[in-house]
Length: 159
Image (cartoon, rainbow, N blue to C red; front, side, top):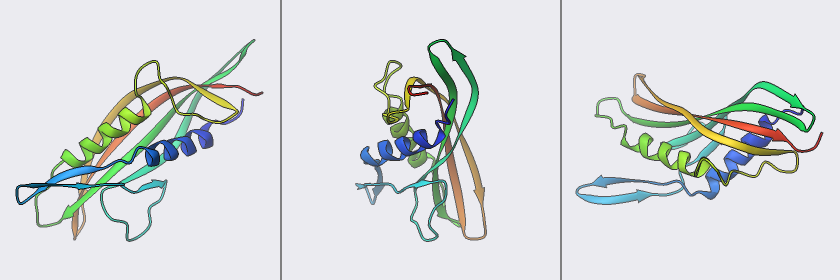
């Protein structure tokens, strides 16, 4: 079986960029919408604003072979990170809202339609396997990460 990790990562980045992920906050009683949350493949640039979306590596699980082809379970982790000034308050609303948009884009329904993985692979099933918050801080900022884990059953089309 071929490794579907790269095809899954590229399709995930493309789907999220096409989805125009945005968020809205209320400033002085007025809603303000920020569009195009930046999306990165594994690493961010030093001076990137928050929030940001980081596509983590795909983990390829046990492969199954049969007379008709190969299938594998792949888990993709997508991290949404938000930072706040160290002396101020924090809210999880922004990371929760963005992670909800990610789930809706990548797993629109149990039957799909799913992302196009190119000529070699096809997503047969996608489920949200979990979403977990992680909070931490350094001398300047407080951070909230929301890690969304999506598990895919992927079939290899070309052997």
